[in-house]
Image 1 (cartoon, rainbow, N blue to C red):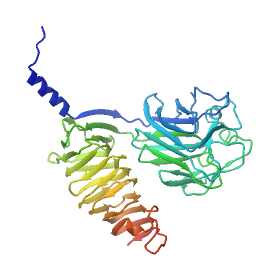
Image 2 (image 1 turned 180 degrees about the vertical axis):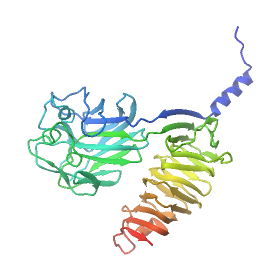
Image 3 (image 1 turned 90 degrees about the vertical axis):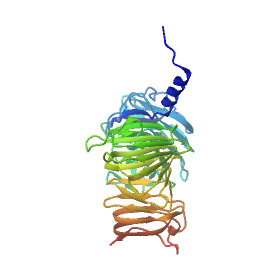
Length: 436
């Protein structure tokens, strides 16, 4: 015989269940790869695509084949077959097929299709993944015509190749030779070569917007691989039903939190409530040590002290999410395209990696760039606060506005560098300035 709990107890238990922090733990694997190729119309093109690519990284055993030049929210799977992202493609032409269709040569077969646009036009490929940090490989194919490849714009930065290495820049690169498939024959032994037929970009994100640059050269892209490079553990906390949570060195809400060590990274990935979640940092039992704080959605406010970022520390705020600080504190390098509001407080950025925040920065307080920090901002709007550079490097890309002074009221410091992209009050071009 089953005993039925009284209604008031059942309601109380249900309320307790709904108010609990929901967490899931996932261990990142640096071998996770999302591989994308662009299908051609040739009947010899391999549709099952069970080939790996030699000469880049661990072979992608499963390929996502795109057969059209206009795609919206197409799901992407990784090399384990798990759904790991989406892709959107706009304004492209093709896919076309290259000059060689030899199916006995895996690289040629898997990357024979490519997308392109005529000179002076641009395509856009937008990819979202569940990777915290990653590397993207853009692979290009010959199309039976001679010439070089156009530079590529990745998340707002132009990339080309010099002496076999991917570098920032807008010059042309590589060599397309008439009637030779540069994926195969021109390289020899099925090898791909950086700076010859692919570019490699590392980023503290798993989301990419890729565009060919508008010049007289072609951007015949044949494939894309995105490799997860974060080797730590990501714990996802669903706080969307909670407005107040406490975080200690051992607990986040009512779920256990394990502090990072130098050899075992920990990332807190948080989904906050749309109407706001406040996390109170309680350092009474010790610092809360982590690699990264990742706000995936919602509005989150941090109050208190005790966060300690180690390793290549970062703070990522995804599009549509808002992170606010309720008092002065330190955070790992800023990344993402969401909104960060420092109010009238001081935000000190720590870490040793290069980080870029392309979202909205709000507040009237100070952003302090610590020693060894390399932090970039793309400020398309006015920031009412000030920047203080104390031994690190501050980059401001304000090319979308006329006057760099519109982006910030004050920049000062005790040492380090300031890199400015944009125009001064008299229209002069801004560039790197050392602080002595």
